Image (tube, rainbow over all chains, first blue to last red; front, top):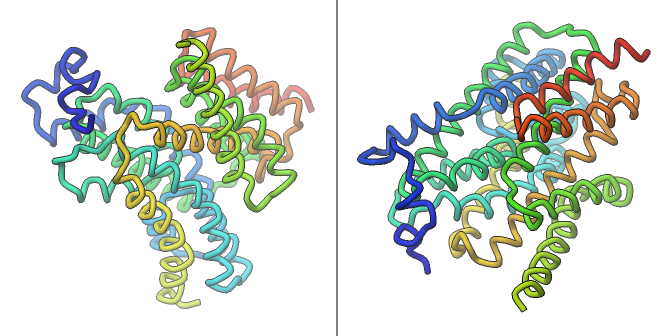
Length: 257
Length: 110
């Protein structure tokens, strides 16, 4: 069962043309090239706002880019900058940031088995795990299942490279412009992210079974936010995900029986 | 804060506080194969979590988005989803139509 390279659905018949005789570098470049323009564009636009924010509270450009590359999770970065600007202690800030980052745990656990090759180098898994964030997760889960397993890790690193580059360019531009964009434009920029997250999850879901956790999350998110604001996202995931998981299993059992 | 102190603050409260969950995820994922039931559950949890973030952002928005009326936010979001399906699941045009509807509506309905 473990040796998915031998029996994985996509390996023999559905292999893309470029994969025949390809090496890891070529797979990396395909990960870069095949990234559609929309996800990196949205990241650039949202990080534009972050660059403007750090400039506003007096952080340096180096601090801004360092956070963008090594934290690489916008909600946590915004919370961190907010805590810094209010003069919070390191401990207080760390707790607030870590609360926004707990969501990365189930995402990392779900993503790695998709890109993992048992005999592949471990450092690639480490690098990929280090940069897990929502846009990267959505894009990788959508695209890598069509890639032969032996090339998934370098291909995924290509996706990561594009998204990190796009974030850095956005933060840099935002910092330098310290954008005084009109409020209506700022609102539209913020709106790109939820729009993109929902549509790309719909794009990667096949059938009602995979759409169910999306619907459950949409319904529970606002309710949990009102009931338990500190833990809303984690609880939405746990409750909504578990309910849809159980429902899908139960429905499948019924149709098979 | 000096620049060095700021870097240490960022490393502890930002980088370490974020990376710990990713590394724990890397560690916990090692026993899972792609088609295990456990992984199906984990995928469902993380999908519901991101969907929850989407609904929260539209209904309880941050920053500049909070100044836009609820009707415009919901309408633009619905239009984006409808465009996506109408244009045979076109991701880019779905996203752009939703965001531009939100922009235009702010000038039209004020």
